[in-house]
Image (cartoon, rainbow, N blue to C red):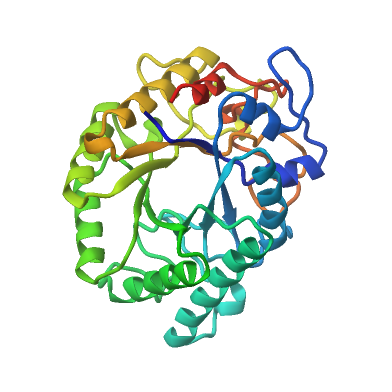
Length: 341
């Protein structure tokens, strides 16, 4: 049984402000959260940037979204990037306002920023159910200070400050550490062994899995089963996605170039089958340590002005064929799987 059946919906607020609409399968337009909730979604993941160029993905937006989530009894995972824009294994840039801080100062602002957002959520009656300290921090965060290419010491110190802030604010909030490539078992061993050696506290292991980048479903299952037993921690695949179509002719060049996973065509049924099989893999994790799956950017449809680059309103959305709404903004069959614990 999966207790977490969710999606990252970080782009939703901006999409709505730019004119984005969403609809049920029959074309009836409605609030995207209503549609997702009616299909069984019970968790939402929302990223927080420090000072985004577009004015989104900050504290004010997550406070607004948290109120809407609570109205529908959808739980919240806050994804702290500790950056002004995208942070991932290939880049972990410091926020501009933090550039000149020494390491003690950097630890302090990690604590202050984390506490500020969590406390604001708590004060409005919507404390986060989970937070993740950093986004896909396989190679560390807040480079160069927190890069773990030579030592995990600095990264560990930063993670401890994030954990301390979350717990000081809301002791019930569970803290997650997330890596990319959920198929790389040796990488997970090396990373989490190093973190545990440095006494970094955490409750959950988050993973990303994109079949066209990371590896086979069998490799994913092997890694999940192993680390669940090795670390005795609950696991969530907090990022996964798969195309429902290769793209429309007029925008195909803007979409991320990827190849089909054998047996899973780029179609609504192929997308549904991929999500269903990933969910089945998580259900089989030993000792019921597999809590669930979250689809990445389920609501990021092709709305002008809501593109990939937050500093360029003309940039395209490279992800619209991997949303859970089709090119006509209608709910796709994969969404139905949220109704299957």
